[in-house]
Image (cartoon, rainbow, N blue to C red):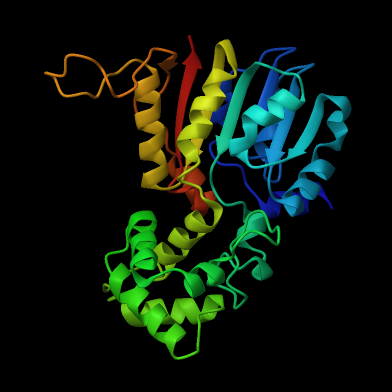
Length: 316
């Protein structure tokens, strides 16, 4: 595959800003915990001589692309097939207790989003899958809609998608299921949501966007594993090590913000609480007082970057 085709498939978000906060130096070791197609990894490896990088990804298709893209770096680069939440186990397997920098870009890769058969997007009619790791034992989005209660479906859509019509959508999904017509494809779900959500005039975002986001998060357990990953990553940074996290929706950003605050020593307990019980401890220095967002030029060139937010910290 040519470099040009790879670039068309994926444009790395906030590349200059990410590199600035990671501040790579010769001989340092980095982890790209969400390797994807390797755009950020390539930037880091090109930044200085003798940098070593370990890429982690759960998507075998993405790993194949990244391996081809980054093969020019030879022994300075290696890939581990795992979920980003397994970062501690990956480092243990490499006998690498600490690293100089870690990056996590929590967005869906363009390879996943633009592959019709993966079932991430309502732009294509395909089986409702949404698994980033397509192992047989992992439930698909269609499996969740076939097995969960109406209450649980509504909860997922409301909490992870912030969709106000979550109860109406869940009720219609279960009604179809009870008629022996379960929702199995992206087209089925998109049309059901369109009938359930009142669309505002001049609304540019498709009414099914929030529901699809919510199911993707649920299938891949993105929220429930995030805080543990953040803490594990900071634990495995060297003193002075840098950590960058790029999020794409408010739930993720809130977790990153609150976890960073706790680990910077900011106590969130009520003022009269005699002893801190919130878990605040001073392990890091926050480098971004506010999240860094793409500028107008980047969002024009890469519309998917519009909701990206970068937060960074340094291990004390």
